[in-house]
Image (cartoon, rainbow, N blue to C red):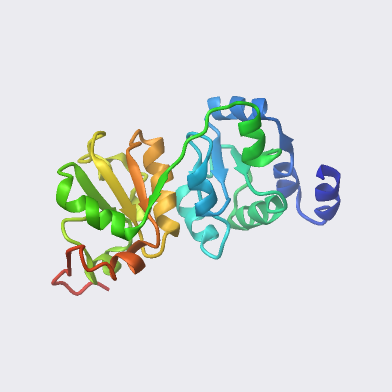
Length: 234
């Protein structure tokens, strides 16, 4: 598999070729200990079911480049966790953005990590109706809406906190959130919220739930009280 991958990518630049270096589980562990960024480009629904603790989720789709550019450090080595066959595309998009510090990719992806008996983490996915049932009875519940302010202003869960995804890596933005709170995260459809959950996990907030379908589903749930902002945001 590795030989085929390398043959296919002879036309790519040396930067991408460097990223196509397969890494063992032990090599990834060492890289992580040396402050490398573990970037997981699997789809959000795959990430929430099991991921390497400390890794950042940015699923490989049309929004990948946008969020990688905003959230991933250009200075730290990048270790890629990707589905087989998606390593090249992930690296090519990163290289186009100007990333050059590639350490390689986890050979065998998350399955190899699990087979080696290493720890994995999960993010609990919940439906909008579960959020509706929990809100009236959970005094420690907090809803974090990671959409842009203009999206939030157009309608949101009553009393939700609006922390846009591009601000979430800043520890100041989450200073008011306590570790024992029950955090429900959502965006518009579910892509950004998983990125957000991975960032919050890295900052020590583990009591998280990702609302599947995001605002698209919450908006249609009549039992959830909603409100709009009286402002004109551009």
